[in-house]
Length: 223
Ligand code: CA
Image (tube, rainbow, N blue to C red; front, side, top):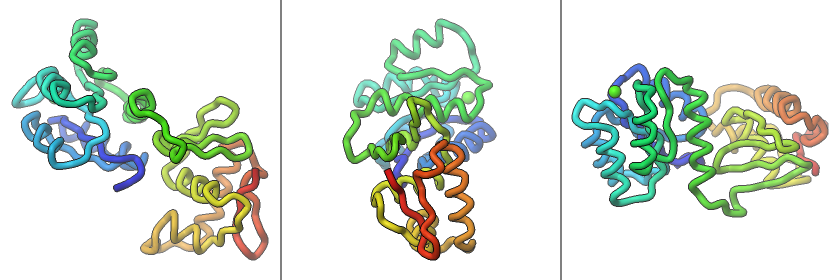
């Protein structure tokens, strides 16, 4: 299972579903998608789901009914999607126990941000999920980096790379080892990829000295 966990997506419009899925997967989540409410309930029993995204208008049911059915037996975080921008829907959804509400058309980036926010709000933090180094706080649950109170957007690879270095502070890690641990052995590219990502991390985090280049050896993170 990926670090982001598994998200259940119940959405009958394939275009929207595949777009949402792509963005969530890029962010490190695994996605179980189904177009029907009845199948959504079955998938919930089949997988260990961390959060559900429910479309309001489904071919075999109403997203409200599905939300109510899930709420009757679990505290699973729920984000509702709707084409209707009406206050009554919003209120009804929240009264039924949905944790947040996104109105179509929405940007997939915004949806991912809402999903992360709901997870942050609904799941207790554990120390294993947080690392701090040189004024940068890494949160593995939301896969975010916070620098001086400002959230910095990182790609999945960038986050995995800085997390891996932060797990072993002051230890020099070779480019080959980073490639192996972050990209996996199947990655066809060379170690130059690591250099490029380190460069992006230095720029994005605004902490050029945090990840130090050790000539001929690799990289290390210094606090
Ligand atoms: Ca629909």
